[in-house]
Length: 239
Image (cartoon, rainbow, N blue to C red):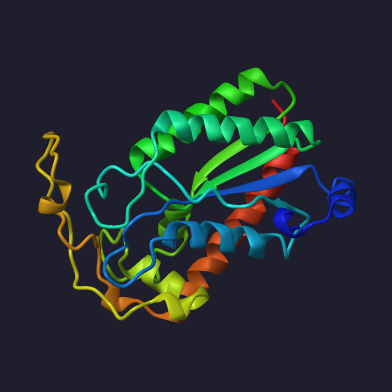
């Protein structure tokens, strides 16, 4: 059930089928010269929509903004503070809880470290604040890498490379504008830098040339299966 497409009576009827909601988080962030700025959001939202075709599940509208640090100097990246991200998640969950939802799957298509930690922190705080709810916080990229390790040819592929290019080739091929050279960032160990683009000029972490739409389809299927299993596990979870 795609929340943004439901009417008021349809939402109310949906609560008779499930009290679980999937919240996709993404970003507006550079993904090389060939992928759209919405790549992270697209992946997270598509997984939720596909999962909802297999089990009763509310799918919330995606949050398109995230905290982006390593790509903050690249053209097109729009970042929000981790404090803002936490408040957004907490406000959205509070409102959904007020509407009768009880189980929350927070899946982020953006894998930035500070971004992920902010979502986890917000989830922990919500557990304390709202007794009776259940929360899972997972990163889409982590699921794709773990489940699709036999499909991925590029070692250390992470951003706008083989994995993400394959995923967008599968779901939104018209948004893929050619390719980008293989590249890996060269940030100095432990040193914080202002001009991040100087150490990562092309914004690619991996090899887009190895991407195929078929890999993208298979990777998405694997991630969707893990999300479906996670929904069932969360609904049955007891402490």
